[in-house]
Image 1 (spheres, rainbow, N blue to C red):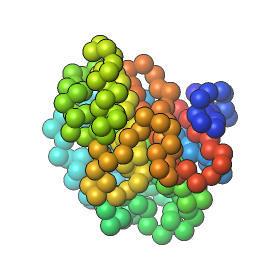
Image 2 (image 1 turned 30 degrees about the horizontal axis):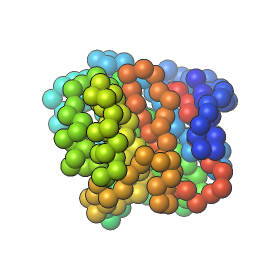
Image 3 (image 1 turned 135 degrees about the horizontal axis):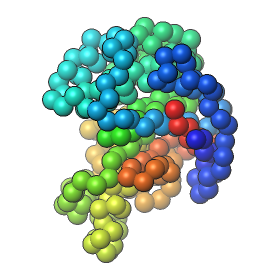
Length: 251
């Protein structure tokens, strides 16, 4: 399934079809990234299914060490699948083997691909949660952030919002009926996480210093993703262009 979201991201319509899956049968070939577009690749995770053993070999020593720290198999397998997908997608666009890609950290700790991606202006970000992986991509120096979350778990929306949301966002949640607060909280949380990841300043940009109730927030555009029931998500990108397009593809 592919969707394209235009302008202020108020409508969705069909977009291009995905290419045929590669011979290993796990990942489909990513479509081209259009100029002036942010592309979001979504993958449904079959929880409890182990990825092929050779997929873990694509990961760096650090990534494999992080995967090994997960207590539950399902969490570890999802982490491996997500990071392998990111490497597969970047490798496709950069004409590199997935296992040969090296990541470096920005001064604020945000993962970045070393020379090839930065030289070509390829921006990317990864998010994964129970049942879903999302990869955001953009060209021409666009900085992007994406966040997806699984719904259903109990959350103390007002308490967390009081500590991490702006006064305007907290007031918005407090004004909602109690039954609607948890869903609204999760959607706002993904917006804030997506913008925070796109910005890349980490802890030097406290979550309560900006709000995402509007589409535009300073020099950023942030919008919700149209996801299957049970998940919420958002993507953020720089707002320095007159026309922006969000493309969503399922792999």
